[in-house]
Image (cartoon, rainbow, N blue to C red; front, side):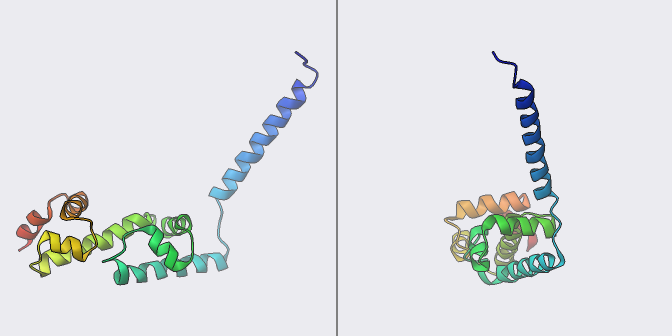
Length: 145
């Protein structure tokens, strides 16, 4: 084995490692310019304004990103950066509020609520609701009335 270039190879590998690490740190610690910050805040506000209008039919980050003409990953990054929460958490919170509202203010069955809010069936609705609230939808309805 030739040791003639091993020192040079090792130095090159260390340099590549340092450059890659620097690139990662630059991406993670990117501080937006004032123009970028205003753009992020506008996109976040637009996202929040869209939720009440579309939440009964659409529950995905991809849908809202499409309306904003950005990628889902970009929307997730903006929402996380400005709110500290994931875009999915915010969508779930709005959706959960709609379920609670329908449970308390209407006499719709769980299947009718599932249909109204575009869940595939009442089992999926029940699982979602229990994950968010710790109780079943029917128990919640009975305890609140």
